[in-house]
Length: 117
Image (cartoon, rainbow, N blue to C red; front, side, top):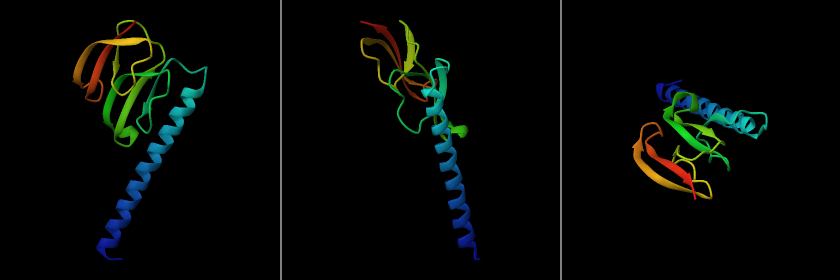
């Protein structure tokens, strides 16, 4: 094989391994969230949207364990005055009282402080 073919094969193999890791992490996270016995806080990779009824409370950008996608800590326990990341929607019946722009603890998205109406 000449050098171009070796380089192309290595790049393809690396990209395939990353895609597989991200897929497996996403499937594992979705299975964990679907279980009612699961704790109210868990982490997921940003391979899709955050499940309904859950909000992101922390984020890490370019996480190696998520194939260099963002990793979100999510919870379904929402309380007045909590901070959440803009990666998830503000829950129905809640409003944003404060916005912190480009928060590093939210993978450089905005951080909101929320309260019920």
